[in-house]
Length: 261
Image 1: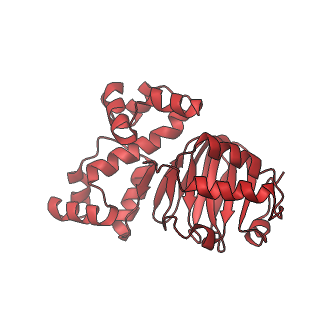
Image 2 (image 1 turned 45 degrees about the vertical axis):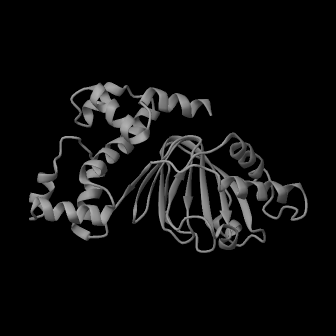
Image 3 (image 1 turned 180 degrees about the horizontal axis):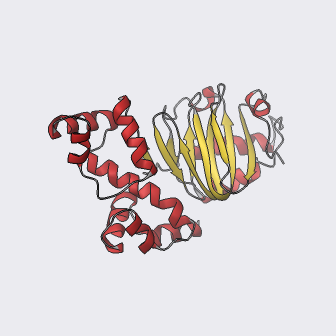
């Protein structure tokens, strides 16, 4: 079983696709790093992982995965104890995949294939069953649905600093006028800047930030009421409405669906 392999092992492997598994201690931080030779599919087999890059933040719940293109510097922080299955793929094998990070769903077939793949040696038989597993993994990768579990960061430095600070302590009570005034801009100018830099309205970005901040806490079993009030929502019902708008399902159904996969 390829477990906790060194970076050089999979970066320089002779096969176009290799898989490794890692088991981490509670709240383990994988410091910012990049993979110069391969793209990565980071599948969270248990627990929950939060990933940040220069362009944004992503939350990867259990039995979901994150596509990380070659060369993208990223940091991974677990919530509690967590484990991952990762694919490291040469660029020529995934030339049609996106050039940006994206949280992906995981079909039952993908999960079963990943479980098999992490038990293969790095230099598996290129002409036998092992290679067929890897080829099918690549085919299944292209079928995975994209999930709205990302938060884009702006490039403009003052706005980026404000967004990062907000993500560390999000609240639904902040208004667009608070930010525009703090940055010495008119509401209309700030609105144009924010949408140009993030691709989202301020209200949509704020809601998405609150939803992503709530996910680790809800995944750890914290009550919806406490999370909702901490995030500045007037009631659990208001928070649930926001959560459903952003993620498509209320918290109870969202986590039930994750556990049923």
